[in-house]
Amino acid sequence: MDDHFHQLGRPKVRVTVRLDDEVVALSERTILLKEFAHGRILDPVYYFPQEDVAVDKLRPTETQTNCPIKGDASYWTYSGEARAEEDLVWGYPEPIEYSKHIAGRMAFDARRVSIEVEPLDA
Image 1 (cartoon, rainbow, N blue to C red):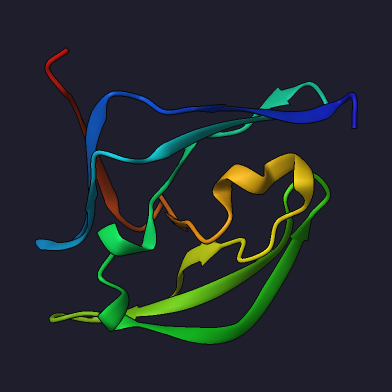
Image 2: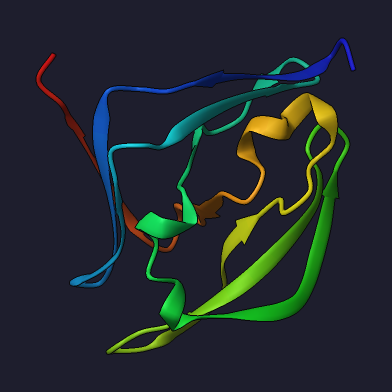
């Protein structure tokens, strides 16, 4: 695990996720995960508390993946006003101990949504 690790932070920002014009998530309580794997820096990911995500528009899919430093991920399809996006959202319901702080939180495929980050006043 020496060549694969992550750093977690709780930035003082408001993060809004939109699919087209529809707000999918809005939070001031995200966790920012920066992952480093085999000499590469992966794109940072915001993990949202479920209470700040439009979970009423999500349905679980069969997709599952495994990360050696986070554990088994589950996926959800978002079915919004304009369209549906398969496996747009993922999370680690029961991550391994090393990643326990993201348990039950949800993240979004940043290639398919717009993510707006706004600093909060100190």
